[in-house]
Amino acid sequence: MTSSNAYNSSFYELVKCMEDVETYLAKASITSTPEHSAKTLSNIWNKANLASVYLANIPIKTEGLSNAAKFLNQASDYSYSLSMKAIEGKELTDEELKNIENLHSYAVNLRDTLDQLETEINEGTLGWDELDNKGNKAFAQQVSSDLTESFGNIESTFDDYTGLIYDGAFSEHMVSFERKGLTGEDIDEAKAMEIAKTFASDNPDGVVSKGLSENGNIPVYNFEVQIGENKKYIAISKKGGHLVYMNYYREIGENGKSPEEAVQIGKDFLNDKGYANMKETYYMEQGGNVVVNYAYSQDGVTVYSDLIKVKIALDNGEILGMESAGYLNCHEERQISKNLISKEEAKEKLNSHLEISSEKLAIIPTEYNTEILCWEFTGKSADRDFLVYINAENGKEEDILMIVNTPNGTLTT
Image 1 (cartoon, rainbow, N blue to C red):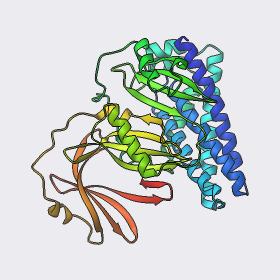
Image 2 (spheres, rainbow, N blue to C red):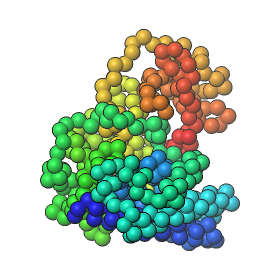
Image 3 (tube, helix red, strand yellow):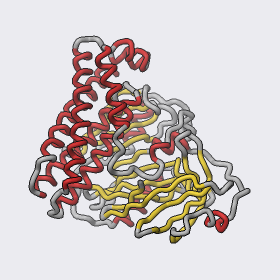
């Protein structure tokens, strides 16, 4: 399949998924029974996940679409969490229904913009191959001013969307154009195909190439494979042949594994794939799956920048998904300073009302693409759990996160 045909295929699938997301969100905003809410919200979760996959495969990389991708991921997570509540027979609150209405308005905005882009493609104004070769400059030159304005509207709209489900501590700051963890030489599609087959479950011969995408943060070869009635999506980096993304959605049977067992299965999987010293940080149960955030640990210091997410099925422990962009962007051996303030000195900087339950050293990323070595304190104040980060070299309070314990896992915000 040529790159142009691959882009067309991904784009039209994206449009269809977004139409479904918008429709299901509209229905969810007016449902009156938990049974119907559960079904509708589960459909949003599934379609938003698929839309994210297809969006990642088209060669338009603007901040607006990056925010749109974030919206899709968070809309998926939020609809999942509400569907679990509805499955238990609980009605949605007025605030939750209002959140769904807000999500619907964002979905309409994104769908309308994609519809305009579809018109540009059908009229021949925009050519994927030229865009892929020339990048976003070509995009700005080819599309109409109305469409460019619409993408600007996406950016401003989703900048206002703060998100409903958190994706792991500091996950929004894990982008590095140096791609420090992306090691090895460039590989061709045939070699990438061999690697993709190792992640293709019981159907390695069914792996199909969907083309090379070079305009993303990490250029990847895209593949898909039919597993039963569903498809698994796999992205292998052009440089070094690393697994950047894998996702597989299937019906999950009755739980045969506990979340704690799943966490260990994910850690063992990463170790087998060459990712040593990974430590679980946060997790979320999703429809019979557990999605675990693992961060690299160096000499007992948790490095939050080097993040890998793994999705494990709770029925049989199968690895269904993995995302390693944070790790591939940021991983390297750090020079960890020994000239630190003591744990006791750092504690003196904390609010006196914080009841400390644990402490450790951690390296956290910042919005300025830098890192800070901190003392991480876990504690409680006024019946709320917090993480407080004190600079381990100068004692400055760097960040505070609130821990949210849910029936499905632990989040921070």
